[in-house]
Image (cartoon, each protein chain N blue to C red):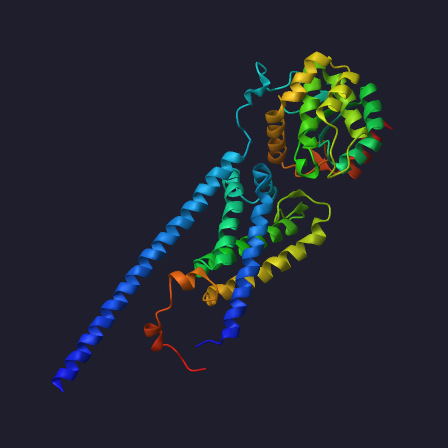
Length: 247
Length: 166
């Protein structure tokens, strides 16, 4: 009987020890798995933040160029008399279909308003629709517009801007290539030799990225947005306000 | 012991919720700046932490999704999942209540959306459904075909005292 009870006690002790070992092993495994998962999350987030071009230094691909187009006013391109009674800030993406619809109807009143000295427009060209293009048309077109501004001035920019909206590619298709953008830039008054390099190199890509971030920080979440007298308007209301202005 | 059928429903919940997280994280991956802008568009968080949140969310979504699909740390991951869905429901409701018209940015995108107001109820309904599945997994994290079963096998001896006949 005493032999039996001892063997039972031994068994119980062995079982307890085995269970303690299992529990220890579980704890170590849990700690290991937790560490790996946390490291992957933190490491992944740091890597991902590094993929974000926003606010990075201007790419060196532009050579000696600073990467900021001359003639730009911050991230805007200002057209019209400084003392015009109405001023509008217009945020646009060259790949945005609603922007094209807005331009199709709005270019005429805008041009009239500017010519009469009644309207001053600040174009803010941004790019967030590369996903809607098979060849990054949104960002390439924005860079090209900045190149035209840099080399040929505000009037040429406006001409080029109107040409791009008149020839906007459908979403998800191959947009005009850089050769076509250069041809239109020259048609708009830019010097071929001066503008080609800037368009090919994407000299103003970083500036466009930062302009897009600035739009978001301004509380503007889509294009087109037309800001008149501090009020943010969509395409319909913005067009109406502009038409009233020049009536 | 629980019936096997119940455990298989847990597996379905894991795969559905995990699959949605992977799809959502992956959709955001190509556009880190877009992810930051989508967070900013909600106009809820201070600008100082907006980029960090925008850069962390897609990665966290992928990690939570992968762990749920693999059945790794199921209870902890479904808790994180549930908390994220609560945060998203609050965020979308807040945007809706303030009359903002933004795409939820749930699967990439984000920013202005003209149809936002008709979309909000669906986004919220989807997130509430996934929240329910996440809570189910917090409650009953043991499911078949999981790494948890492999790495952290249930100690049958220690369960004996608690097991109730069903």
